[in-house]
Image (cartoon, rainbow, N blue to C red; front, side, top):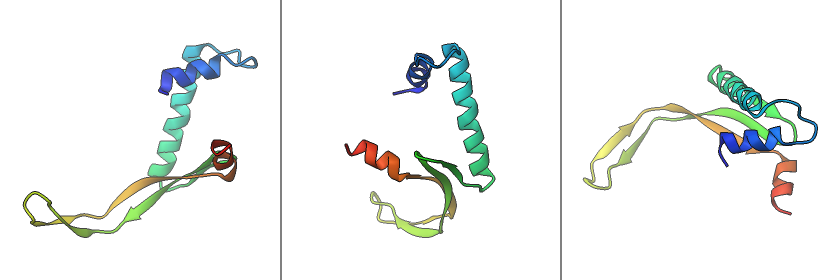
Length: 93
């Protein structure tokens, strides 16, 4: 499912009175807000869905499989998502 398909589904619900274009703008705004919060180092928790956070990956030495040469991989931040219990249970029905 892509953004347009998600917006179509949300816009087609009985209780929604917004247009598909407005729903898509709202979804993009929500994802942008989540991204901005994570960029600032904050966690974003959506009850019943999950928690978005940022993890720190330490610097390490890796090996290039083609040449066998050791390569230094710098430390970096990575996005992480932990599914809520309700989401896990609904997926495993």
